[in-house]
Length: 352
Image 1 (tube, rainbow, N blue to C red):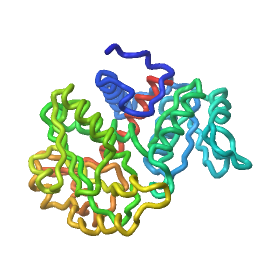
Image 2 (cartoon, rainbow, N blue to C red):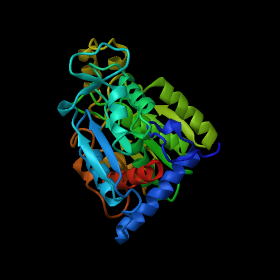
Image 3 (tube, rainbow, N blue to C red):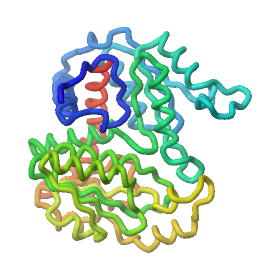
Image 4 (cartoon, helix red, strand yellow):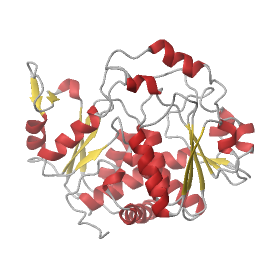
């Protein structure tokens, strides 16, 4: 498939792009990272350009990596707090007083800047799954400038790019890399699906041998699973699902344990999910924690990944996430966090 023109394109989901296009992003990111490490200014790329950032959910890495990235590229990022502005309403829905339609917000901002970035994944209990992604698509429909997905309820495409970049840096490529994306226990049962779904989409698209591990009752979106299976066939990689944590980690080069919501939350009508059942599923699997003993059964040169923030003592032990140097397996979680900066600069450079 031929690569489309980059300028003006939205970045809403990895599935909107080909493998070749994603590899182009990673190449640009590596070049920009090299310049940044050497202190070579590249503030001519987006000089005097503006990125509007709308955050419906809080952020540390995402907000600061986008703001720093725009500064390094010569532009400026505007932080927009929805509680301080009109809350956009979807077209065709009941509009409360003091609410502005997505079509109006999008068309106003695209007259003043060069891209709109949005984070909105809602509360899994009180939000219809897919509703946040639909809102981003609605923004993209009305805005003539690129709309960037800083995480919604289905995809986290920039986090997934950072994950892929970290794997490529550590292993030189993707072929033959055994990649285990696993659920992990957390006291919080309301964590979105976006991170694990984007992680397995990129890994299978790029040709890795992917294992998705989770207890029964923690299934991800069936459409995402079907896409991963198709990517694996096309890329020459593998895609498997396991319900045994330690078996899935054996021989893995990438170990990525992360909590996400139980399936019953997504199957029940909005606001009617069985919280007791969900809590029971979580509490039955407190042993799904990434410890030093777990990492010892992975490949000798394995890396631990996590999008952060991690729940220390629940998802992972301190001894794992803090082992960033030495011999044997290592934590690459902070390299992964830094790479958010570089992949986001790459995408912004290409589409803005």
